[in-house]
Length: 337
Image 1 (cartoon, one colour):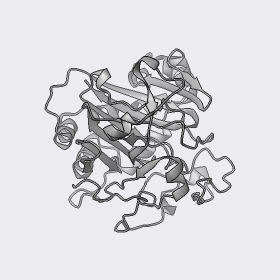
Image 2 (cartoon, one colour):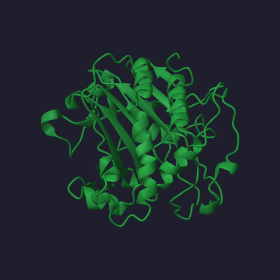
Image 3 (cartoon, helix red, strand yellow):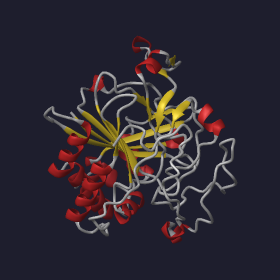
Image 4 (cartoon, helix red, strand yellow):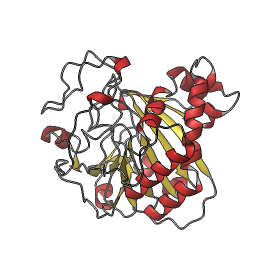
């Protein structure tokens, strides 16, 4: 697909049909309504709801970005992901590993390929069947699991704290993350299926074709993050320092209020050069934040991937965005080395 085929300065793309998500809301959560944004970017009264029960991003993927929010977040463009469903494949119910994998591979193949601000990046929606994705949100590790495993990996700032763990902390038989997690058995089933699919030959072959990856893979890794109040490092970087081959991230949320704030940015090299140095950054590396060329909406069942290169500048902005205290920035990072 051509770069920006569905993009627009304000997130246009009227070609995408809008439909309500009433049948997709979780009844058990008793969400009164899906919240809309005012022109200022502030939310309407929400009773500090932690969940909004949204599992499908269709209604919001092409929503108009309030000018004030786009200006505040210093974003040139919010691209729109491809919402088309594979005509030859009925969405599976999430029970069969093979069928879920077939669906995920097909959706990956259909995802748009971006060629700016750098080559070999992709942005996707509805990668997982709805039941599979609901299980991922339902069986997300509780805070106690992160605390048990990642006490030394926890970092905090004035905006909030970042919690991180390796997926094996969930899957291992005697994992520390399992302590005090009543639903861990169901979580293991869900996250093992996730790991088996993203590291399957079929999925990786599709991803390498999408990104133009030709290097051999020596190591694979999946990390789970929970950034309270959307806390992020903020620095613009390429992942070259980690000697990665490819990076992929899945957003795990059922809320839509933080969609214009928590997403990842892609940057041009010129934007990196014009970055504003961070007070708490590493001075020897001149860590800094900058304007975003593309910023992905932080929406349910969405994510992105890119081939790591000297120009794969990206960041999770921290200083310019609104930090929503009631919503964490939950994500799963998949790395290939």
